[in-house]
Image (cartoon, rainbow, N blue to C red):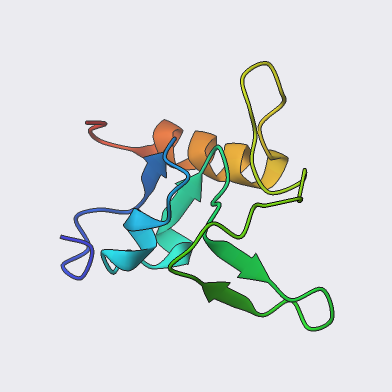
Length: 88
């Protein structure tokens, strides 16, 4: 449905990377609680989806209960939700 232009954005609370593995483009995905399998290079900002939890020892990769959600992902989610014809 993404390829046909029906799905504009997937807003997710999952943090396991399965949405990216399914083929959803990152530009069409708002991961509100982060992604524990996504490793980001501190030098060049390249992103690597791993088969393991890359969150070990990193406090900045996931949002836990009571913490603020990442502003960029929340803004993306709100923008698409406001423009949506249907939300499932």
